[in-house]
Amino acid sequence: MYLKELIEFLEERNPDIVCPLGFSNPDSYRGSYDQLAFAPTENVTVGEMLVDAKSALGTMYYGYKGGEYVMDEYTECWLAKYGYTGESIGEVLLKYMVGDFKERK
Image (cartoon, rainbow, N blue to C red; front, side, top):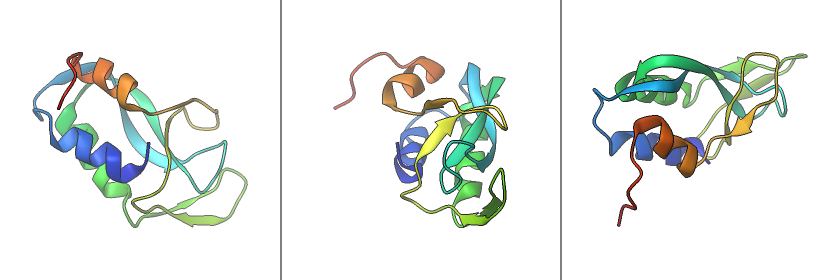
C-alpha cells in the first residue's frame, strides 16, 4: 500500500478508535531503504497512526546501511521493527487493526 492510500484509509476512520495492534515511528524500511516502515505498536489510536503517517510525507530518512531517502505519496509501506523485514501494510491488515470488517463502498 502506498503512503497516500494509508493516509486516506486512516482519514476515513474515527481518530479515537484504539487499536490493540497498530503502528508508530516511521523509518526507512530494512528490506528496501527507499520504502517506509512503521513499528508495530500496542494500544495506539487511529489518530496517532494518522499523525505518524502524515509526518512521513516529504521526510528524509537514513537507510539501515546508509543513504538518504525522502518518502512521498507513492512510497510503499511496511509493518516492521527497526532492522527487520516485516509485512506489507494493506487494506486487510488495516481493517483488522481498526476493527472494521465490513466492506466499504
